[in-house]
Length: 330
Length: 276
Image 1 (cartoon, each protein chain N blue to C red):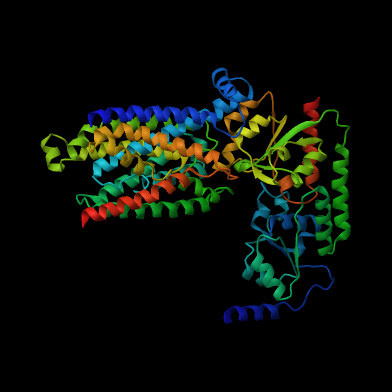
Image 2 (cartoon, each protein chain N blue to C red):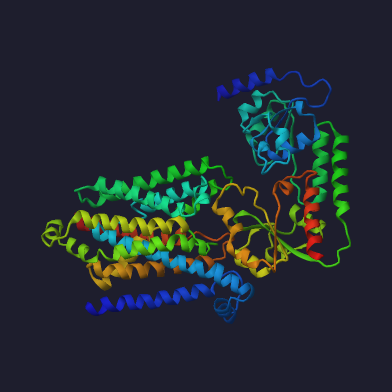
């Protein structure tokens, strides 16, 4: 087990690196391999613009958002000891979208660009706090998920309301972006808006590994090991808020990444949360990069949203988990 | 069902006397293109109501003139209640209103869609005839023709151009936009990039196509959306030097009308500036 636990992150990192490089070679302009490298390295001509201003930021956002969602999923599943926990299912990503919608369509982000990640993070924080109040001491697996479903629906309704009231003719049609997510035509401005917060969130989440390990023994056992449950809870909430809030602000909510990835990693690293956090971040990046390559290869007219792919994988996965849970509970 | 019939019957009773002169005097328009043509063709007093967009300066060339006229949302009930003697509509909005109006005997004129400058001339003449103002229609067409004719200069060098709209849309062959570009002496690159009339084109494709003139259609610049952010993408700033960025308000070519002459004029002037 120890062997595969150290091998997994390395293998995943290699695959992610491969996907990241591949994603730079895939796009709509027919650039030869040598032009891609030349554009990237020397910033010459239109190839330079395409590589540095379009494909590179797109790839970086794929890595950032995937890592944010993957690690947040792993941390939430560890904290709540709930295999269905995930920023999307729990409504945290939807509330981040809601915050972003308010910032963009009502002019806050035009006046002050960091208003975008800040309001999205505020949205994520509100959802996380409401959920932690709702679940409270009761650790029922389904209570939390049902509360999350309610929150996600509330966020979608409020988003539709906000977009309908927005003084912009394009707003209404953009609910699709906020619900399904996309990396299309993003720029370095978006990377710069999200990266500092995502990095801080990931660092914070990574630091909770030991405490989450102790928590697997139960709250009382964790307490006896000198770990304050409330303080881990706060750190996880803060980390998820920073990472998910900021990435959703620029990519929309990409569904199920945080659910799928930790479950796929667990057979290799075992049930120790601390060993799951880093692989889940890398795996999340890999999944989002792969989905983003897929949407560019499918000839679909207007590009598909990322959530189309991640949900097609995620929903059967979610159902499988529910059936598995039912067997375990009965 | 009975309620609807009752409302219908009441509406029919209310609509007994049409205009004496034979020209419609109670015009209701339910679409921004129809609004503008009505305002351009008849006295303001004859227009009872216009659509909500008629007063939006981003999209209506005659927003000033429309101000103060009653606004409608193309809903069947409110249209019938206005007791119009002519409804100007289009094939998309207010279908229900149009159908109801024809069942109670109010004439409906559907403003056509223009895919070329010739279509624009035809639409102006058709609407003018429906409004009982054929001479005014001819005047508008003549003014538009004169404006376009003035821009004609021997094209020394063809200039390549591409229109880019929110959501990454562009206009290819068989569109009014394409015809306007041609009249301004510009070679539209869109037909090479897409076989469709209107299609989304990836930002990368636009950068790689490197048109000499990139026409950005960003009429709602005061507010933000994801759709418009593509027009402010840093990649376009990086293109400067190779590609001239030019902004045109979409109101000049969104609807058929004499204002398309101004679109030709502005683009021809920009072409002349580049070739110098």
